[in-house]
Image (spheres, rainbow, N blue to C red):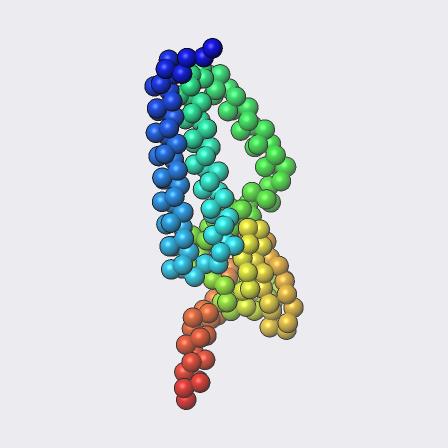
Length: 181
């Protein structure tokens, strides 16, 4: 029979680690929610960031718990490097998936592009001018001036120049002024 008292240090440290990870994860979700509201970012884009933060924090918890419970560091690093090599090969095979997810994160945090903005994608081959309808984990959905609905991979949005012709809030202010006159 297993004596739980012989593992009381490991149990205590594991519980503390889980509480810290859950606390930090909760605080990061609040910060993402607050940033998303102040930046007028839709819920679908925030969900992607929530999933990535969950993956990061629970991955750190798994590594921490493994080390607390006595997994040999050399064996663990060998296992981890094998898993990372396997995942790396998968991402190289599907490079566009990784680049689109990365571009979505960049669009979420640092690009001034928001839903409802009227934009022009600066491309020599195509004239894409219209209104941003949605930004997902992989695509930007746009309604062009001639009524077409097009999807652009988010990595192309980062690579191509985007000219913001009118922000959504500017459009509301303009329509309110026109209505008042």
